[in-house]
Image (cartoon, rainbow, N blue to C red; front, side, top):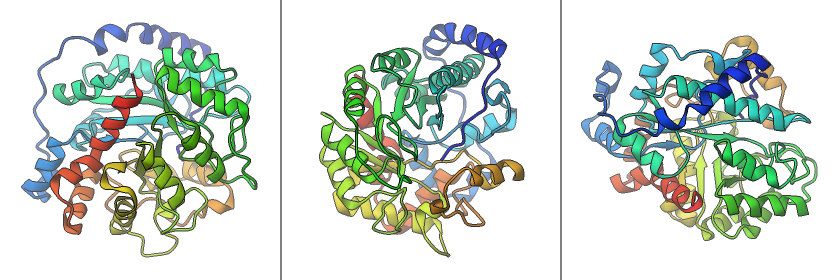
Length: 385
């Protein structure tokens, strides 16, 4: 659901591109000494067991923009010290920084987006790792840095099949096949009709698998989702969605899709977006755990992870004008309520809150570590050949 950032100016693009050219050295240098773990007062409210699980796990949030911000040149604005401290406090080791970029100029906009965010990472290479391969996830954990996966919540930037390899070369490692609307590839979840993958869409899936780019069907319609799973040769992902069996919402996934995803070795990330979790109040963190339970019981704990679909502070913390514009950009079927976030999953310590809730639900430590990131780490290791 991440909003699209506005376009960079040509001057900003050139500056960011120069920074991207320098990424190879600072982001792939020899391992540095890991900084000390945060000792903020906020963590003391969690039990030693909860803290140990989070600190031990490789925590991967498979939809977590670095900043929910629709202002001009969002990626040209430096991260303030508080936000950087909160990244470390969060316990999240890997952020899938993915945005919705659509329209006739999507190819240019995605190139600008990659240049802008990669430039920001290059300017903060003492804190961030741009992910190019699965081993970078583990390296970031060892070095006490934050790994960032570059993704896009659409595929309109693939104007021809060859563009898949082009954008992979620019650092793109995950792409949704569609956002919510119809494209030349397939149908989105809020379209009136879903005709499934087009012939062109089939070719795009094949090329993404060939170059080692993760196929994501989170926003795809039902038929397009099933087509992608069935036609892919290997595993794909639903990075951020929930279970329609628990909440009849068009953006959620059927049991049929979840079963077929798991049969291919795929993983589904559960989101904390309120209207995706429950249709009515109260909608709580325990309601989110119900979706994790459902996937685990349906196909096994090894096929579920986390894709929170928000930054560290959530949608409700956005400026009022931005939040109003965001809600207005979606169809009524999205069913926005007064709040978008879930209490407890709307703060930098949300992974600790989630871990605590999973323990209360009776999950074992190894299963919790799998949900927090182990399952997505396995999938990314398979896909990013």
